[in-house]
Amino acid sequence: MRAAPYGAESGQALSVLLDAPDDFAGFRQAARALLALGAAPDGVHWRWNDTLATRAAEGDLFADGKLSSAQDRVLTPDALDLLVPAPGRPVHIRKAQLAVLRDACCHRNPARFALCYRWLWRVQRMPQLAGDALDADWRDLERLAHAVGREIHKMHAFVRFRPAQDASGEPLHVAWFEPEHHIVRAASGFFMRRFTNMRWAILSPDCSVLWDLHALQWAPGATAAQAPGPDAGEALWLAYYQSTFNPARLKEQAMLREMPRRYWKNLPETQAISALVATARSRTGHMLAAMGDDPGEGEAAGAGEDS
Image (cartoon, rainbow, N blue to C red):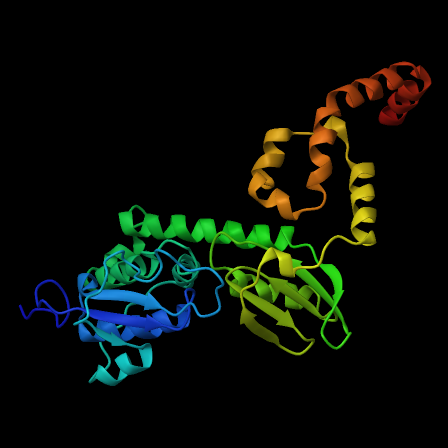
């Protein structure tokens, strides 16, 4: 059998340079070309530009954790396409599996692109693997995708816009968010659809996004100090949150699962949570005692259930 042009057997390696740490379109294009070339996963290193981020991606320079050598060919997905003499054997996967790969590519795990490509390379050779839910690589991909999906959900829930003005004095709502993974692009469509008529910007260490009522615009990452501070509206929101907090329905562990503490520093309502939780039991006791002192209320409720 002829050795793959890139990989341990041939002794040659190749580095693929993607446009961004979450460049799924570039990965997909490169993976098609690499599969057509028959490039083995152990001969492919994944790199990406991270020009928008304010912080260095310490482990993100080389996806599989192996520093590519100076002799490696570094090619973009477009350059890879030029090496393919003819379309290779296609890999057929379901839309749901494609979605898993897309989400997995947004994970901060430095080996994410290598893992995605290895699974595709194996499926090309053993198509039955596409339906193997217990395959170790596939389970790792699902784990990455699940973490990314959960982080996108948290961003949708925990972004808090504050009113501000842009350089020209126009109203602009600005939020600060620190995602655990590269999800800002994947999550921004939600805010565009929900706040279509509002000019807004979301700042994050990885990148920033501005909705100008027409299109999403991308900018370099920012710091928390560049986001606006609390305003009067935030105090009103805090008062509302405290007034609607029902101590009798408090489930502290469930609350922490849905609102992990790492998000608290950027949520205004969390400054009141500790006090509300600390007094929940005594407030519940007062509520029950008040109900016990008013038997007429209980009889009325009972009559209502019988009718």
